[in-house]
Image (cartoon, rainbow, N blue to C red; front, side, top):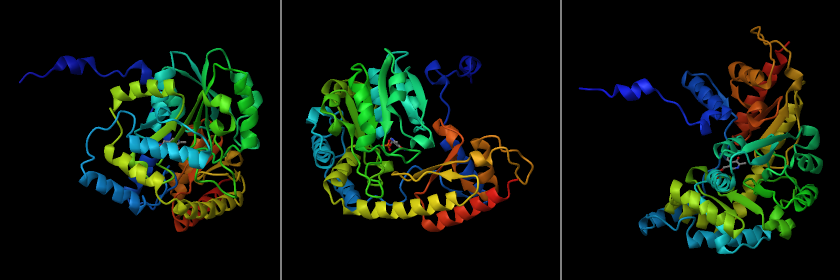
Length: 410
Ligand code: PMP
């Protein structure tokens, strides 16, 4: 038998487009934590970016009904008319924003919405302003689309929010987009109407800059925080704003892979071109389930958010009780992003010096068997992210271990 040695000799070289993009730090830590678990170590994973609740029964039922009634074929390219209508109603009902059906697009997760938007709009070297800490996929998607992420540090003192002066200073003739995420993964920080206003005023002065807002965690906000989306605040800007959302976090549907967006018709059309050559359409069954999620009962969202708020309070107070950690109280999402500057320079009982937040997180995994993600993975150090989308019992146990491990540092 002859073997095609030519291919083997040639080896594999990835396209330059993805050469700077690695597997995310979050996935790497997750894989290590899982391997430790398999070896019998009692690891508690505080890294997951998904609710620990189940998808509601009426949503599951809608999916079963869709399968039985033959909704098992390709659908319209960027969303069924039923789902687009449900999204349109959602934007009107919850956000006070009106979109026509052809100003709405549906994709395989909000991640694909971002991907479609960047692929459809960026030319090589176009700049995208991304405040840090940011959800890691933002910069990676921009880079795959051959754009240039322009990262702007927004520290804890600024509430992890971008300031108008910072935005103004970052805008150049090459700026295509600004990406804002409220409430934020990883910081949990959210923009109120008052926080948004000065930023929107800057954008009004620069008509070539478009705004992408990621509202994925809209429903998970605490202490009577009033969620608001820029398209509702500034009608002039609506014509160059893409409002991104999805069912993953609100309805505990991360595996169903449905995200959506509202935006100007021409942009939505261009995004559909990308999608048509990537996936043809989102899953027909998941789209039917998403109609049930958006049109169905919403009361359970409040109960779930109350449960998240109890866990947030538990985690924030436990972290702030540890000397050397400093945790701002987040307005939303299910993450804390805690400063760990006080731990740098200390020695572990095993004789290793903690130089960075990555070292600190590695120490917590090895010693406390608690898997958390360093700020470096989100573009801001020295911090670490805890996802508290896990049971209160596990959170208490993990925080007790973290406190003990911190106390053992010298
Ligand atoms: N935006 C943010 C801020 C996220 O945290 C996530 C998921 N981690 C997404 C978008 C993507 O969500 P999905 O693709 O599941 O809709």
